[in-house]
Every structure is written in structure tokens, then in C-alpha cells.
Length: 130
Image 1 (tube, rainbow, N blue to C red):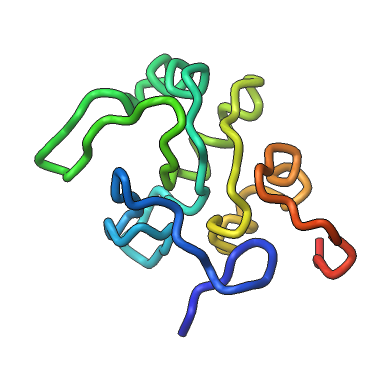
Image 2: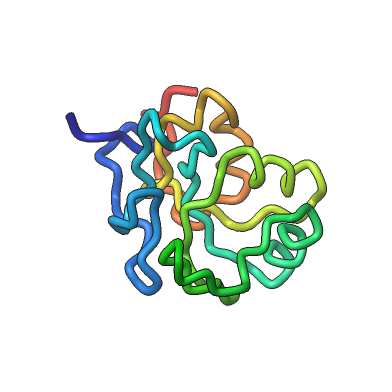
């Protein structure tokens, strides 16, 4: 079954340079093994990376054993719902690509919050279910 994005459409790829996703398939796909819910496609900023470092989530240092290249501002990456939400509460959330953000995140983060940070908002929001 095709996974859906928060807009109700087919989940679009988040990023291939670097290759992101819990399954390293370029998408914010999720499954039972993804305990962190790597479902938000974020465009990371320096501020977001600094925040993540401050809460013990180092997204900048490469970790080859996990096929993790280390991120730079402007990279698109599937981040965990919990850590993104924490950044939101701390006023340091990264922009979100809604078409590439997995609908599974809606169990943890409301669409209204995600759309505040959207960088790909469709022109007509009337068809979205909140």
C-alpha cells in the first residue's frame, strides 16, 4: 500500500542528496521498526541543527556506520516527529515539506502546526481535512 502525505496525496520523496529516510530510500516512509517516527520532511536550518545538538540529537556529525553523512543548512531530511515538535515548542523548528511529510505524523503533530512551517503549501487549502 502506498503511504500518504499530510495533504492526502501520495508520499513524495524528501531527499536524495543526502539520501534520507529511516529506510534510506529518500522518503519519510515509516513502519513498526521506526520507533522515532522519522516522518517529517524538514529543510534543516543552522538554527534547527544547533537546537538538535543542544538536546542531544547531533545531526551535523557524519556517522558512516548508520549511513549518515551529517547535515548542512538547506539539506532535506526526514526528522523524528518528537524532536521536530520539541524544536517547535522551543521556537526553532525547521521548515516542512508537506508533500513529503508522512501522514502518520498526524498522530503526534497536528496539521495546523505543520502548515505554519510549510514551504510547499498548495494554493487551495479547501480540500484539506484538518
